Amino acid sequence: MDKSGAVQEAVQPLLSDGSASIAELKARVKRLQAKKGEVARQFKRPELTNAERDELKTAMKGVSQTLSEAQAALKQLLNASEAPSHSEPPPLPGQFLPATANLGRSVEVRPLLPYETKLWQAFVQQHAHASAYHHPAFLMHIQQVFGHPGQILAAFDRGSLVGGLPLTIMRSRLFGAFAVSVPYFNYGGPLSEYQDVIEALLEAADSLVPQEQLSHVEVRTTLPGLPRPCVTKKVSMLLALPASQGELDSQLGAKVRAQTKKAEPQRPEIRFGGLELLDDFYHIFAINMRDLGTPVYAKGWFRALLADEQLNTTLAVAYLDGKPVSTGFLLGHRKLLEIPWASTLRQANGQDMNMWLYRQILGFAIDQGYHHFDFGRSTEGAGTYRFKKQWGARPVQHYWYYLSESGKAVADTNPDNPKYKLMIATWKRLPVWLTRIIGPGVIKNVP
Image (cartoon, rainbow, N blue to C red; front, side, top):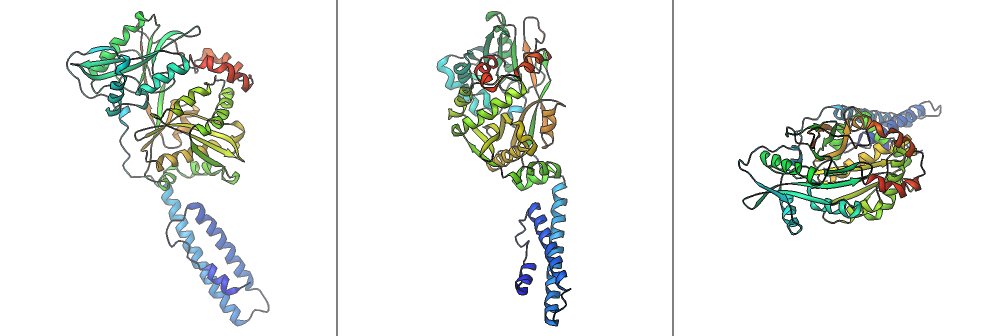
């Protein structure tokens, strides 16, 4: 062994740029400990000359000093990673904020005419409280893919648009006839900066119940205090994102970080893209939905959303050994990135691929300049709620209002309803190929 080379390697500075990660520092400490042991063993050589002994002493001193520095740096980094963040979180996205004013006069509310769609689109684009789902593209795709007609109730003040409520009317033998704002998603309720205009929109929606022979109108929003019966079973889990991925790792804590890295020895790969990843996304999604006992959407539904250049959509697909195993459908709106759909194959759960995927997606969100990540809707206290909470996400309450002639909340058409347990159990036993054929015809009627 070249002793001078060993000395040089042993005392080589490791922390000169201050950019080493916890994993890198742990590996360096381990290597230095091994190097120190190797040098110590050489002192036992019987033929050791005085010059060689002096050289080994120099090497041991250098190794010990560098090891001490690396251990101190590792300890400091570990302490910093566990320390709470004191940075000011970004303000909530506007779509979660309530109206704070009243217009103070009556408005004209009527269905928006087809040629006025661009008027509504411009209103949505400039409105601070608008969600992605207020965009008229969603009503259009719902009608084209699922066959459910939609309309926008628009409020006008002296000829100017001051509010609106997108609605989709759904009719089926299984669930009857009703309207939803907006089906298949979490948001898209009444939009206005004026509380009294929002209430006027609800009054206009009331008239649709007898007019269209509906059992009810379901209005999905995060706005509290509207004068209608409401259900508050669900919350959105929202994570305020730090400025860098390093800060994210620090705020996640050691337990979550360990879970996100469990898959790394398997060398997973992540791809972000669009239509070119649709087949891989849908393969995972269809299998996972069958395993959950939930009918799967038609692939054409996702194709329509991905192909629409007005919508900021992205697919994230994770691979093991070149095969897709975990995926998420992402939708960006202003400074908020949402994941409406996510799936992981059961055989990949042992490697915590779901955790690895979400860590890659959060890194993507930070790199793309988003301020918040929306993990989606959960029932408070449920398994999905706990999964999202461990990332540091905070609940935002949902208020789902029901407009009906009885004035009461109506029967729950959500798959969580206990009356669907037998149907779910049966669905889990079906082959995936069959669920891909019959599933879209069922799920299109489940809002």
